[in-house]
Amino acid sequence: MASISTAIILVALPMPSALKGLLAMAVAALAADALRVVALRRGARGVVALRVDRAGAIEVRDASGRCRIGTAQPGAFVAPWLTIVRWRPHGGRFDRTFIVLPDMIDGERFRRLRVLLQWGSTE
Image (cartoon, rainbow, N blue to C red; front, side):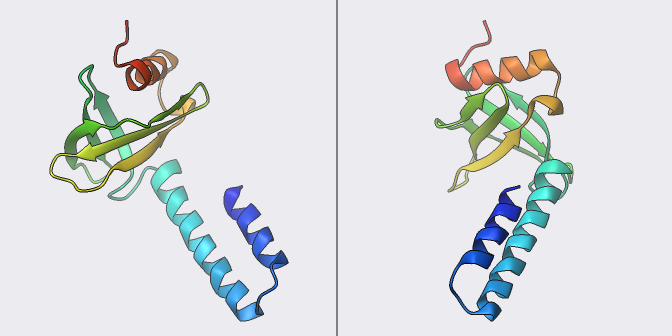
């Protein structure tokens, strides 16, 4: 939906058609990448498994089977309909994020993840 909305806004902007076409192709490429990584959970950034403990340690396994260990960072977004996890791999310079939707895991695990990210405990 965000990609379609962006494309509609691009059409309405006063700029040359060639530039609109170029920007529309960039939006389409980003939408395809987001679909592959988030929805299909494929590629090096597609998260297929996650483990978070009370101390904020996080272990992430991607679609290629590689496990990375890091620390959950402040600023995660937690809501009943969406959770965005911010974390930084050990030795990494930048934070990474990934999305967890309610239908990706069972309800109790989703609740526990939200509580851990918001308050640091599941009790």
